[in-house]
Image 1 (cartoon, one colour):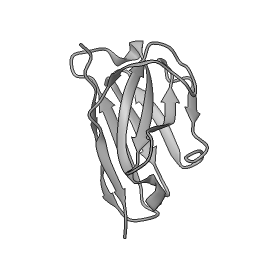
Image 2 (cartoon, rainbow, N blue to C red):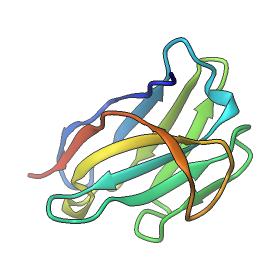
Image 3 (tube, rainbow, N blue to C red):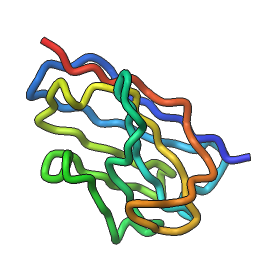
Length: 122
């Protein structure tokens, strides 16, 4: 079964940057569109970005548009989320998830990672 593994989270100051990675050891990710989600304490999980299987299409939530960039390197079997100009409102657990189709903003995500914590604080 496909297992997704996120990495790259951590503590960063407001205005800083982080790059998250999503990998699937032993599986080809290029079959899937990959979404990035986040869940802040006390809030519902929300989708922040989605990238198509080829990487030719990407979509973003309004809250991150212009600050976050989703990309993928299918040769490395990795999807990235570059996050810039981070604010405290970006704090949360970030998850990647796989969908067999590119569907925005809704999707059917069959596989999820365990999440990586992002904390934006001074």
